[in-house]
Amino acid sequence: MIAHVSGVVAEKFANSVIVDVHDIGYEVQVPTGDFDRALLGEPVKFYTYHHIREQSQELFGFSSIAAKKLFEMLITVQGVGPKAALAILSLGASEIVRNAIAGSDSGFIAKASGVGKKTAERVVVDLSDKVGLAVTVAHASGSISTTAGDEALEALMALGYTLNDAMNALEDIPTNIPTAQRVTLALKVQS
Image 1 (cartoon, rainbow, N blue to C red):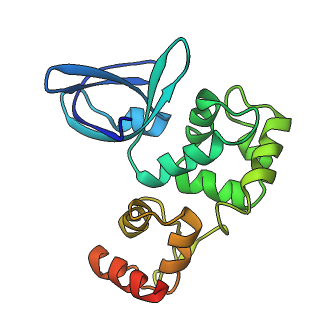
Image 2 (tube, rainbow, N blue to C red; image 1 turned 90 degrees about the horizontal axis):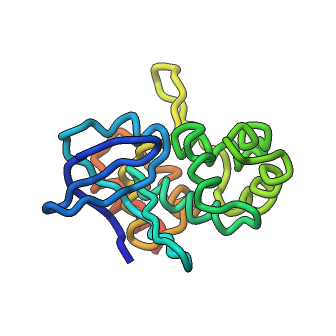
């Protein structure tokens, strides 16, 4: 199993990025946001899902562990294969997609290419209790942001926490302290 690919972006086409890793090119299919951020000749790291079928092998890559975990949840839904899951994750940042599922917004999920209304409803029904509650964090400046790109969340998930458990562990921990300290505090809360 290929867990991640780190290297230099050699080529880009359609929704695929060729990552050159020590003179071996890996074709990685990525969501639209990751595709747009991958720049030719620049270093990149994708957390990958290695999909093996009888006729082919494909790599699906994500810039965050949270996006990969959400992808893995999506493909457990009947009627959602890797391409449909990738289309769903191409709708926006993984946290936006996760919030849509948590908020039972099947209309948002149905906007993904190749995903119909019934499949979108099935995604919401099957996963809404697994992805946790919709999360927004109010800042002193009055702005509201989600936990997209939260390194502490990704670190907890790398340690084996589910997305929901990691979010619960970080719920009351301030976001303005260093990531390592947030992870340490979250681990103490959970023990």
